[in-house]
Figure 1 (cartoon, rainbow, N blue to C red):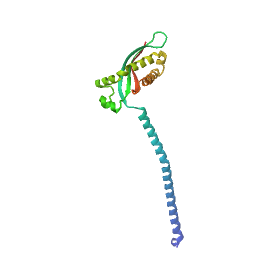
Figure 2 (tube, helix red, strand yellow):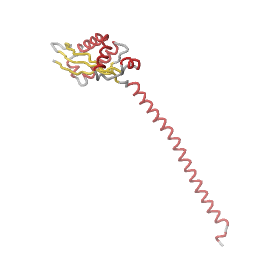
Figure 3 (cartoon, helix red, strand yellow):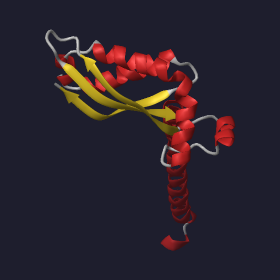
Figure 4 (cartoon, helix red, strand yellow):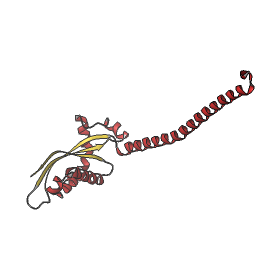
Length: 182
């Protein structure tokens, strides 16, 4: 007779419905919490990617030809007779698309044609570059060059001075292929 009571089955149904409702509410609240948190994380990740992409685009132009400026022997500004003998090579940015089609491609100075092309292109500016290099090197002392990071500082100074001297020609880096202080 206990099995035939309508109140007993009703209680079991109520418990099952209550369990289902609790499970649905838990699932919905978890889903909402995840959906609210995920867009923020995605937005932050997209922003980081955009910033890194802009940095890569704006700060890393394509490498262009290498221009060997030549050998320099200068008196350093130290008291006494101190000399610096160095060979300077400039890493230029890649020419624009119009220059690539005119010059036959934006090479990195590897072949005879590209070396001749960059030398011909830079010839009108050579006195400006050489003067800037000699003036900058002659202002140096042995102490500043031999200080930690001294050569890198000198390279950055040369790059800045050279880029100021000739607008439209951008020096990306300065290389010393020979460097002797006596």
